[in-house]
Image 1: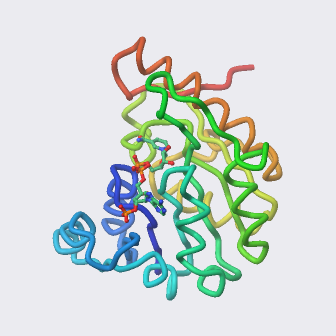
Image 2: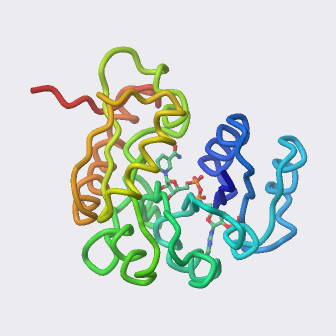
Image 3: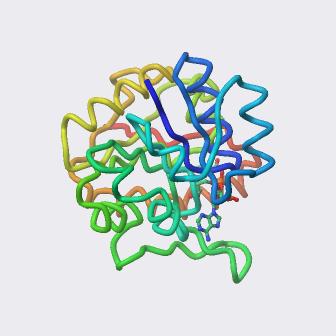
Length: 214
Ligand SMILES: NC(=O)c1ccc[n+]([C@@H]2O[C@H](COP(=O)([O-])OP(=O)(O)OC[C@H]3O[C@@H](n4cnc5c(N)ncnc54)[C@H](OP(=O)(O)O)[C@@H]3O)[C@@H](O)[C@H]2O)c1
């Protein structure tokens, strides 16, 4: 598939590298067409890079791997016409480190980043997932032994099915993917990251995850 990864940070790199290794045609997007990190990544992976709009233009799926506080700006730069009808896989968290650690969790519009994006771009199909774990675990769940989960939130079943398939290709088993329902459930997973950050401080590693046991 043609996949745009919006974001040149660690998460964008990890997801773009995994997707390219799976044979997808990946374009990494950034604010400027000449972003050095994106250029270097594209050269190393035989892939492409460009502005957010360049990346989204021909993509079938768009991954939002930008900071949650700037995701609206990033998708606005990508352009509504380039996002129309497409699945937007939102892995962002609205973390505000301006007062240091621990970060404040910002929920735009009083709800969630995912809903903010869905409201701003009603013709996209936003699916929230993968934001509750470290990026290395996102693409290699076997880094964490035993049973653990990845969550899925979104208003449209077909869009969630497409994301399920991507998650499966990353190594997530069907029994690990927990569909939380419509996009309002993104509020829950975006708040969960506050606990994740504290656990990271306590455990000293990102190789852990949430497991739902009943
Ligand atoms: N670190 C993890 O393992 C982890 C785990 C789960 C979720 N997340 C979430 O994943 C997302 C990506 O995290 P990250 O650390 O890889 O990257 P990041 O530093 O949060 O974001 C980098 C991207 O944000 C863009 N950006 C910065 N300011 C902008 C602005 N004013 N307008 C538009 N775009 C702007 C940058 O554009 P340029 O390319 O032009 O510089 C860059 O592409 C975050 O929401 C984070 O909370 C991270």
